[in-house]
Image (cartoon, rainbow, N blue to C red):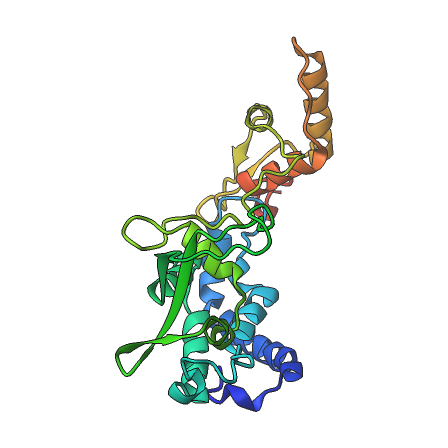
Length: 280
């Protein structure tokens, strides 16, 4: 669905184009996966529906935005004659190739394949030795392939053609393995939340939910895997019983919040408090 002529859109129009394409892409995605969603909801094995982040509008819009990325302004008069070697079409193709790569590691491998890292041959100290706080340990040279030949370019042309800053290059170098490929991990979003419940607390919640007797539907058991608790119960009542059990146990255990209790009940169990209509 992405247009081939990316240059016809200005930076101000990218968000509008991405939004329109997002709606159309989501319609196709919903049509293609309609049957899959019905099967998934039937066989999900939990009370709540499963989330599909790849179908969320913001993620679809992000993929479209990345596919519409175009090079920024490059160098003018550098000693490598970058603009004479690579045309605007070449730069657009390089930019699209980089941003269309799936996965964090593949993009880092692309960067490592197009740079060379050397030891610094000469260091020139300005003023005194303590003036330079960050001493450079390595020198980086940048390349692009042109007709199968690895052609050197300047740093500004390299980063502007890929529409990136220097940070992705720095992270790629930090995670480079002995074989020259990227061996690091994507650390984004991997931090542990300060208010995250401990594993032993979650296990106590699961054991508490498992204590309640449950039954299968007599007439609809072939159509669903849902089990049924006593109709007089609610999640709030179950949580109140759980809090009482935690405070009266020896030693007392700090209970999790009701939101955490509901999250476990809804995502890990396929339970309901009402009898199926056919059984009533």
